[in-house]
Image (spheres, rainbow, N blue to C red):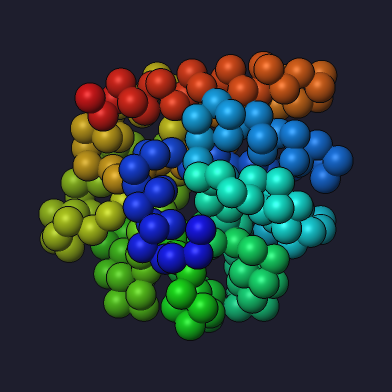
Length: 216
């Protein structure tokens, strides 16, 4: 999948992006396939990992021909953005707003999801060409902060990340989130360490079900 709008639609329609942080390269394809089998279509590999570009390329090849979209997170500068996009990243996330990252994403027609917290940051991100706003860390401010941002700025698309779980995901969607990002609440690291890919798939599927229940 290469069309920018199609990638955005996939992220929003599925409602959840799996944040795959700190997973060994030898396990990354098996874990990605298990999470995808659990119903997650948007997979984020973090750019602060060693050999991140190589891992993105491996996962991209392994899931080619499926409905999966592969992205990169923790992209902190323009050089990192270029590297992950060349490796196959179809969306780019960051914990902050870096205009150089935004410029690279916009130039390459890649979905840009910068991190914001305040109305000023959210407004600056949209002006710089953000496609979705990553409200991070969501646990610091909670679901009500979505309305606090959308109140003065209009119906901006917000994806809370950081502290979102199956137990509170309905609160975030009720508050107006278009999607959520989830790490350890979705990615079963104990199962990964044990080589239990069924356990990885099952926890991902449970989170997907929680998202579906929250949106219905």
